[in-house]
Amino acid sequence: MNLIINMHVIDPQNIGDLLSAPIHYFPFPGYEKSSADLRTVSSEDSLSSNLIVGGGGLLFSRFLEPVQQLASLRSRGKLIAWGVGQQTYGSIDQATIQSFNYSQYLDRFDLVGVRDIDSGYNWVPCASCMHSSFDKPREIKHQFVVFSHKKFQLHLDQFPRMTHDNDSLDQVLDFLGSGETILTSSYHGAYWGTLLGRKVLAFPFSSKFATFKHQPGLYPVQKWSNSARKIQLFGKVLYESRNQNKLLCTTEGWQAELKNCPTHPESLEECRERNQWFYEQVLNCL
View 1: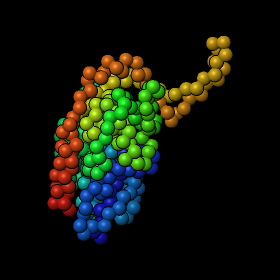
View 2: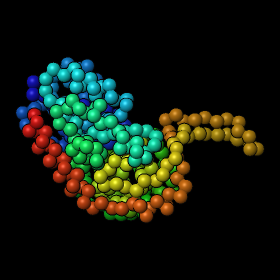
View 3: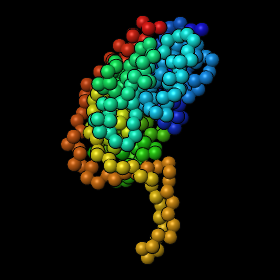
View 4: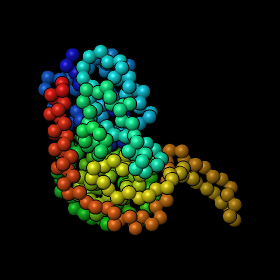
């Protein structure tokens, strides 16, 4: 069967997951295309077809077993990684990033493109850069806008804000493009803001924020903690609840980091050219 399945983690509330799949942007003449969740590796179709794994931070301990199963259980077809990247939670120091073991995920792939710069593999950024909405001109209306990951949220309430659980890229890009500088805890918020030519200050929660080729500014987050709701009377806490699905970090002194927020006007063209180049490599591989 001439079938291409794009294997990725499908989170319907994460627009980055929904729009990172390369099959949305490139034709594959003679092949039927479909998407499947990476975690469904036991499907007979997925084990006998050409598989494109990507995009997103799929090089993560939670996904190591299904990625390795894809390689070990395959009966035919090609196995291709497109725009995948590392993700280690906690410290984002350079030693942690540089010591990441890509080979345990990727050594048995037929063709590899990694969105992280200096990974030792072909650099291929997230394919969402190919979306036509990036070609729309957008007017700056605000000095700052805040775009939060739905779990790692920024409390900078004095500015316009949005979270990434939005199903319209046009709306997201209109929002990001309305800011001169984007304050974000979302990987794709940082990526897309950079592609729009805006300054970006990212508040990272994993190593992926320090692996961009076109690096945004990074706020030195010390810790993300569960948000809490307290009821107090005369200084005594009567009731406290913690939201396990929403984490917060301090944002004190964020303005001092703005000097480290460059723009990258070449980023959109460069990312698109690299994805087009990799597409040609994929066709040759198939």
